[in-house]
Amino acid sequence: MYQNLSADEILNNLTQIAADPYERAKEWKMETGSKIIGCYIMHFPEELLHAAGILPIVLQVKEEPITSGHAYYPAYFCGPTRSVVDQAAKGELDFLDAFVGGDYCIQAVGGSEVVGNLLPKVNNMFFRLPVGNQPWTHGDIVQGLKELKRDTERFTGREISAESIRESIRIYNKNRSLIKELYELRTSKPGILSSGEMMSIIKSSMVMPKEEHNAILESLLPKLAEQKDSKRQDAVRVFLSGSFCGAPKNEILSLVEESGAVVVGDDLFHGFRYISDNIGEDDREPLEAIAAHYIDKNTNVPCPTRCDPKTDWPQYLVDSMRKHKADQLVIVMAQFCEPHMFFYPDIKDAMQAAGIPHLLLEISHELDSIETIKTRLEAFVEMAV
Image 1 (cartoon, rainbow, N blue to C red):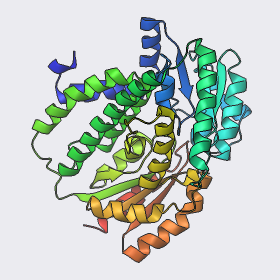
Image 2 (image 1 turned 135 degrees about the vertical axis):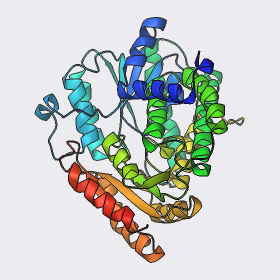
Image 3 (image 1 turned 45 degrees about the vertical axis):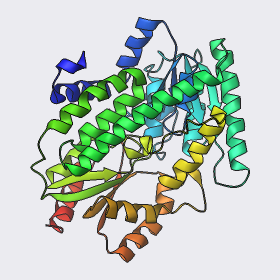
Image 4 (image 1 turned 180 degrees about the vertical axis):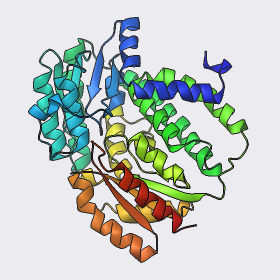
């Protein structure tokens, strides 16, 4: 189907899926008669859920203002958690058959509980992901995975075999590998994919069957590879960081590029953070491999929600800037994101010590200061020209 479409047409289709993130999942449910499980934003073993024959989707932050959710979650909590609560309060998540929350930050824990109460007809589960990297961490993560596997089997009424988990790991690894190829292409041809298009690719992957998404990417990659080098080779090269849960608003991504910059890399959740590491496909018991993946992932792309004292996210950003030959760092911080706010002073010191110019944008969900953000971005990019 996608082989006869141009690269622009494929990207437009993925952008449409990302813009209405649950529609493709609903269509899949009608087509297959199977169940959908919503994962509360980040750090979830989608492979384990996929192996049960259900479609796991990452719940998305919506662009529209929060209204009904104000009655259930305070305005001084982060936008991503409030948005998901708002969707549940409005009945927009009623199509889910199950919901799984997590404990990676205090706001997510509270949001999971509220969403569970707002969806009384939806099977409510919880994934306990131990933080840190101590000698006992790996075994504790495996135990958490076993608990989720047990609850999922009770929900679906079918046993999840080790081989089915391995097959799901292969499918998800393929998706990560294909998206990594797109990242490599964007680095070698700056501007061939806008940051908005890259985000749409990741976001659509989160909300549709991975098998279908893999087929789309296999058609897209050679078409993009054939295109000539971008005309933006001389643009200011920017690395984007932050936004651990929700996708940055399209307006912000557009403003970065309209200011005269080109995004050459990122560690966004709706970006490289989501696909950074494959799960081992060796002879290990698959839950052991998934547990190792979570520990390794925090080492390779550090996440402040993992509370690992060895986490050196500031140095990771310095190294990433050098790897991508980026001129500037733009940090997108969700307002009231405590894990990010806690780490920022160290990042600021590391950037100053390395002589890397950076700009911190603290973004509210309502985005009530767009002109101020535009002015700051334009002035920041001008510094590198």
